[in-house]
Each structure stands twice: as structure tokens, then as C-alpha cells.
Image (cartoon, rainbow, N blue to C red):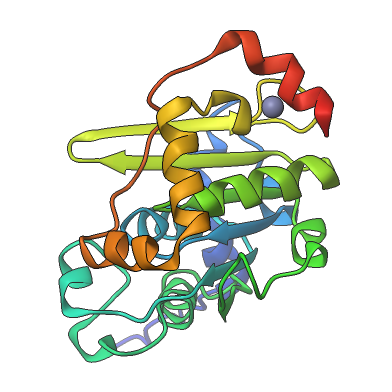
Length: 226
Ligand SMILES: [Zn+2]
């Protein structure tokens, strides 16, 4: 009986194979993806999908920020969360799950409130900022930070069966703030001026938001104010 040939598996080659189908696309740039630094704000239902897709596509430098801990109700909408993760910080659990999906990803989780705990340096680190948020205040904050630092940001929002994704480029109106209508500002002012109402809103359930109306006449005026 002849000896079986030894099969050597080149792990580097396997790693290379992971993206072989994507590289068949003529416009695909795996090198750009591997070099990109991505800040993801929000690790909820939308954040889970964003992070999962970043991992599958081969993004390596990712920072995810979220202030919440996992509740049982998140398990039906978060592919990165497991039953035993309930009670743990969403950002940290999501980062761990992403590393399991793609071991070359150097993702870090930050259990923090983007409005209070994150400085501009974090935004400056990123090449692109992606928001998977459920409120206007955080979107407004992201928009202003991205504008100041000249970074593009992508806003994702889901509401019921509807969803929207928008890209905002710094220095190129319209920015997110330009797209806010009267209803948005009324809600923002109420939330920012009265803590009791804010708590009541949160207790009633955080509702993902989309802009109610687009006011083209305000575009340049608002952007130029900054
Ligand atoms: Zn603007």
C-alpha cells in the first residue's frame, strides 16, 4: 500500500481565498477595504447588520461605539448576539462576534455614549463613519463632528418595514442637518430641553427616525453657518 501524499494547507492562501469571489468583480478593491478605518456608532439591530457585513467583506480596522447593554428583546434582531450575552455591553459583544466571523478584523468595542464620552479624535481616526442610530441627537452630533473633520458619514435608519441609507460628504451640502424638517426640530428641541420628556420618550420605546420633510431652501444657509 502506497503512502498517502501529505496535504499541506497554506493558511495564508486560505485567507486569500476568502475574498476570491469578490475579487472577480472588476471594480472591487479589497486593498481599499483592508486599509480603511471605519467607525460604527450604534450596535443595535442596524449596527449588527452593518458590522456583520463589514466583517464578511474583510474590513480590518473597525471601532464600534454603543452605550446599551443587551436585552432579551435584542436577540430577535441582532445576529451577533446570543442568549448568554444578555446583560453585557452591546459594543463589546458585537466586537467579539465580528472577530469570530473574521479573525483578521482588529475591531474594538467602546461601551460609551457618543454624545458625552467620545472626543473628536475618535472621529478623526476614521476614514468613514457609519451611523446605526435610533435618535436625532446622536445623528446631529455625528453630522457636526464629521463636517468639522471633513469625514464622510453614512446614516442608516429603519422604521417598521421602511429603511433608508444616506451618504453625507463633508463640505458638500446637503448635510444631515439640512434635511431636518419642522417636526424633527420640534422633537429635538423637546428632547434637549426637558429631561422628563426624554425619559418618557425612551420608556415609550426608542423609535428609529427618518426625516419627515426635505427643505431645499435651507440647504446652503445651514451648511454655511458652520
Ligand atoms: Zn447642512
